[in-house]
Length: 413
Length: 142
Ligand SMILES: Cc1ncc(COP(=O)(O)O)c(C=O)c1O
Image 1 (tube, rainbow over the protein chains, first blue to last red):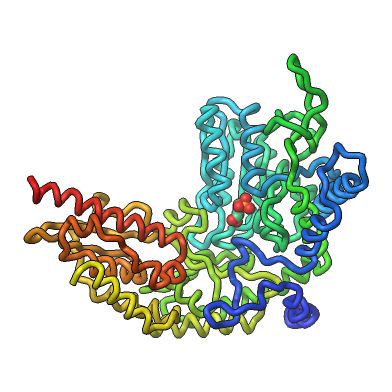
Image 2 (image 1 turned 45 degrees about the vertical axis):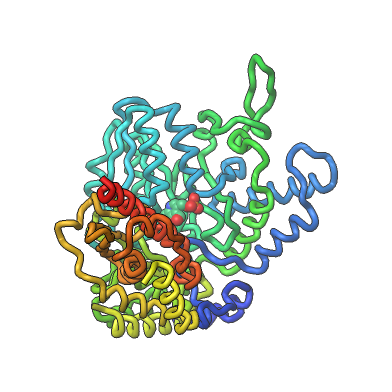
C-alpha cells in the first residue's frame, strides 16, 4: 500500500517547484534534511510574495484606494484559508502573529496574566521547545503560579499516567507540543485536551511541527488555543498563527497596543476593536501572511494523506537502514512518530558529525534543538537530527546513510 | 618563531588544502589529536571559555617569561581549531600575545569551515588568552 501511494506522488515534479534544492553545497548536490527547523519554499509561495510587492503593496484595513482594497482582501483571504485549514468555526478565531513563539507568548500574557493567580498551576511536558517553557516561566514569576512538568518515557512518549496525576483543580493551563521537534513523538492531543478540560483547565497546543505533517482539526481536538508557524509548512518566515476559541479571545486583554487594534482612542479612554484585530496591533506582516495562504493551498493541493504516507515511507526506510550503522543510537523511538530522527553515534560528537555531513552537502541540525531540559532528561549534550519533507527521497536517505557509514569508518574514535 | 611567522605557516598549510571542506576538517581533527593531554584537575568551571558552543577548557602558566597554554575541547573539530591558537600563542611573551594581531582565522577561511557560531567562540578564546597574558604580565613585572 505504501509503495502505491508513493508512486502516486510525483516527487520529481514536486522537487522542481523548489528552486533552493537545486544547488551544490561543498561540491555536492544539496540534501536538505533540516526541515523541522525550517522547510523550503515552493515557487508558488515565492511568486505570491513577489507579486504582492510588485502589484498590490498597500497598508491594509484603512485605505479606500484600489491597492489597499486588494491587499486587505488578500490578507483576509489568508485568514479564511487558515481557518478552513484547521477547521476553525470562523476566521475571526485566527490571529496572525510572528510565529509559534509569539502565539504562545500572547496567550501567556493576555490570558495568563489576567486569569492566573498565586497557587495556580501551568502544566507542560518534558519535551517542550523553549518557546513553550520560557513564556510560562515568566508568567509564573509574575503571578506566583507554579510550573508543572509531565515526564517523558525512555522511548520518547509522554507518561500519560503521570500527566493525569499532575492535573489538579489548580491547573489553569495545559500547554503541550503536538509533535516533538526533537523526538518526533506524536502526542495524544485529543486525550490530553479531554483530561485538561475535565480538570477545568484550558489547553494550548504547540502545533509547530504538526502543521506540515498531520491534518489539524481544532474542533475535533477541542483545543482552546493552537499555535503554528508558516515557515515550517512551506511558507515564508516571519508569520504564524494563534487560533483561539472566540469566547476566550473575547475575554482576554489586548497583547499590545497601537494602531489597527482599537475602536476609538481618546486620552481619557480607549476602546478596543473586535477579535481578531484586537490582537493585531500595528501594520502586520502583510506580504508574508498572503504568501502563507498560498503555502496552505500548496499543502492542501498535495493533501495531508499523501504527505503523511510519503513521510512515513521515508521514516520507515531511514529507520531500517540507519540501524546498520555502527554505534547508532536513536533518541525517540515512539510508535507514534513523525519523520524526525534524532540520533547519536558513539565516538563522534554531534557537532563534528554535522560538520562532516555538511562537508558532503548534507544539511542536518545538531545540538539541543531548543529542548535543553529534554537533553538533560536523556543525559546527553545534544543530538544530530534529520527531518524529512515532501521533496525528500528514498535515494537521498540512501546517500545520507552511505555518507554516515563512511564518516563512522573514518572518524570514529 | 614569532606569532606572525606561525600564523603565516598555518595559512600556508591550509592553502595546500585548497578550501576542500572535508580535507580541512580532517586536518583539523588530526591536529587536535596531537595536542598535549589536558590536565584533569584543570577541567573545571574556572577554565571553561564562555562563548564557545562546544566546550573549551583553557589554562595558562608562566614558563621563563613566556606563556604556556594548555587546552582541550569536547568536540574534535573545535579541538583542532584550539590547537592552532595554541601553536600560535604558546611559548610567546605576554607582551607579544597582547599586542600582535591574530589574522590567520579569516585568511584560512575559517568562518566557512566552522560557521559564525563557532567564530564567536573563537574570538572568546583569543580574548581569554589575552586575559591570561595580561594577568601573567603583571606577575612578571611585579
Ligand atoms: C515544537 C516547536 N515549537 C515551537 C517552535 C518555535 O517556532 P518559531 O521559532 O517559528 O516561533 C518550534 C520551532 O523550532 C518547534 O519546533
